Image 1: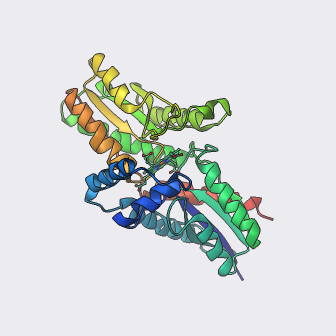
Image 2: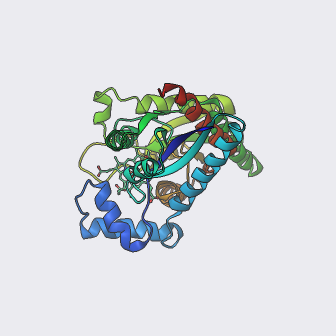
Image 3: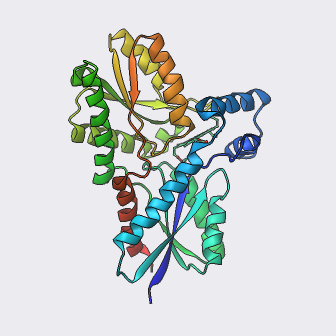
Length: 314
Ligand code: FEC
């Protein structure tokens, strides 16, 4: 008989409808409701991306289904059967709901993984802490994949996307080396650096590895999507980076948001609308690589990390 192993696939989460934006934003702010101005501003950003649809939900659903299939294929004939459950950070089904569902289905052992490759105590650390607490309460043994930012298949998937877009610049008449590749990720409060957090180093390692794999020399790293709080956030922000590059006469920009794996607000608004608008004002051409979504190389990255982590279970 095969052993069933639960896989808690965790992701940021997004509202299901416009009337849930306030509850979602309040959850992100740890129970503090946003001001009416903050709420309006966020609602307008959602309306701007695809007319009030929340693409992250369908995209996460597709990624979890594709991962389930990949795990099934890679474990055909094995004595282990992996069963995926979703657990979202800021929306239903919450991380705790996912663990509860596993326990309800009789799962005794599980692996947790987040649909974000880089570890920070403020991001992945938060997901893991919540899952761990619920699992301990319900008697499910869990082990976690902390990061996978240098997995060769992840690097190849990003590099393929960088090369595909650089080819489009070439068709438009730009020399490949003329294009500045900007690797980006969600900013976090600067205080993480004093805490010895690996987030920034891991991101720089991913950027360097993708650049090497894609044969790109003209690149730099920049932050994006800093929160609307009084804390100083890691910079430079992509909008400032674009202004500086414009002064250096750079005209062609390719953004590779390697901190994200899916199309959602931070990509579709912060890059495709906000950064593109600034680039246009500065007379620059800005393109973005396609998100990974259900790319088989990404699904295999996740599956291989999960299967390796199983050895950590008793
Ligand atoms: O499409 C969607 O509906 C959701 C898109 C979304 C993703 C995402 C990923 C990350 N965040 C990270 C850190 C922070 C910190 C704060 C923060 C705030 C927000 C707000 C929205 C939001 N985030 Fe997010 N994030 C997404 C969306 N994020 C909306 C609230 C309004 C705003 O500030 O823009 C500040 C919270 C606080 O007040 O303390 C910190 C990190 C990631 C990437 C890793 C991951 O996916 O977990 C890090 C997607």
